Image 1 (cartoon, rainbow, N blue to C red):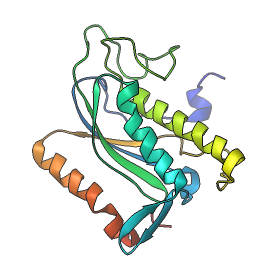
Image 2 (cartoon, rainbow, N blue to C red):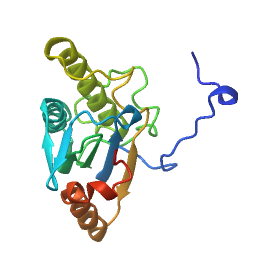
Image 3 (tube, helix red, strand yellow):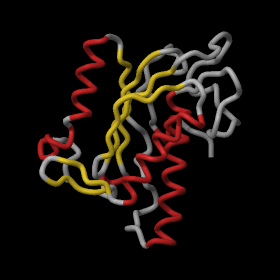
Length: 187
């Protein structure tokens, strides 16, 4: 079914005209559907990952093998969401269409040699990989079931524009479990 603006009323939250494959840093937040706490729990201010949380962490780290032109910085798996900083490094940006058109018709797993992944393409691959792994473990290892989707439809991203912002976001990620009860995603 094609997107019909009269029915679907979706608007992009992405920065117009920004190439999400260009070199730079992005802060990503992805939430579980209905904010279900599926990845572990906070004990004494520390995130204790269950097997599902370890899988999410493993899949995030594995993205560097899947995409040649990214570098991963701080990240944390929380009970019902994930935060991470991803850096796009290198790649050929000449002649690439804007975000949303680059990957049309192409699989979300891997990129052609020399082409930097878009943030959306990378997040899409991450969500797909973790969902497939989670479903497999629901069947094989009795992980808790979720209703229809593991992740919410969209994700939050913030373009990190300077060093000060980078350090503030890094600190936020590092101390996120200490402030769990004040977190807007707190159960």
